[in-house]
Length: 481
Image 1: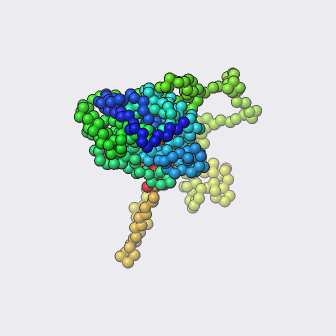
Image 2 (image 1 turned 45 degrees about the vertical axis):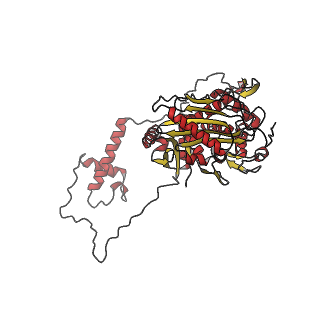
Image 3 (image 1 turned 120 degrees about the horizontal axis):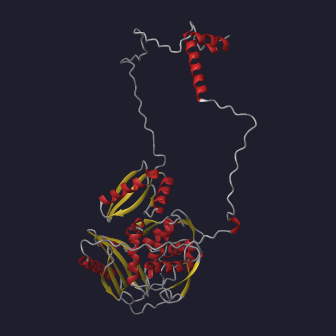
């Protein structure tokens, strides 16, 4: 049930939470466990599940999603999708991450689980696995709905997992603009990204019931801080408050600290059903992973001994090594005899009237070993005559070797050029079969260094990404252009 809040409603409750992203240590907490409306911060979970599904082969970035009437009818902010339209998943992800498009978020959920309700159950299952104990999701976009609640604490956990679990996709949250297939989209919080040094995401959210929400992450000098604010009164005051909290975090965070990555949850896609308990203490049917059942009719009942190959009635003649050597020696003697006959311009056996008996008789008169005749000293070899009037023209041709090798893959964004080059070398050595011949390229971005392999065909890039992702290595394809 959607809740309509009048414009005159009292401002939403305020909450804030700040952590050192490296260690997970709490640097500031204010009303952080109050269950409030998360608004579009919800889309962090929608995108997390999409990245998870891509990594495990449940869906592909270039798979086309058919937009339902339900997704197309979502209110703004939206991409403007039409019912029945087909669009690649990669464009839906960009629209949800950058523009915070509600229709794109719903389309992602329906593509993965068949319905938004089923996807909400998957969101709750994933939230529990991540430790978001006071969060309950009812939809994929975050529009206000009864029971759709989270906390500043839980959303900070969500942001930290996005950064560490899917670093290859994390750069989406720092893009000021992005190509969403049917048009260009602009980041909902591009002002903070531009104005606050080191900011690289993550997600904004606003509804009348929630106020102005934001989970932001920033990195400076190897230190990374994540801050979440619920209930801001405006975009400007929310951004100012988040900037203050990030500054506070950088002041309190130690320069050096051991990185304590959060544990990545066990993948649970579509499959068998189990009972899970949500933050509201109500039981819901969830999905606990794929269950494979062996059909009795297809079970192997016995292991048959292979039959021996039948022996043919006609005896098979097998030449021994001695027989082969004798035959080769005889052939060589015949060839030498033919070459030494006076006036023989071709082998004796091919001359008119030559018979096997003649060949054998000649061969018998020729010694087994014949030394070759020295080349005459007065022999003039063929030479090319040149003159100034007829100069030799040297023709140089260049053959294109691209063969459509204008695709690439990205294996993450790193804080230094050295770190990016190191991971490129490590990845190239571990995946030589598909990356052999590719170009290792480090691209300097405003918030880090992208580690890319370029000069691949689309098929090779797709295969390389699937092989790397199967080994839990972040990877996504880079289109030409």
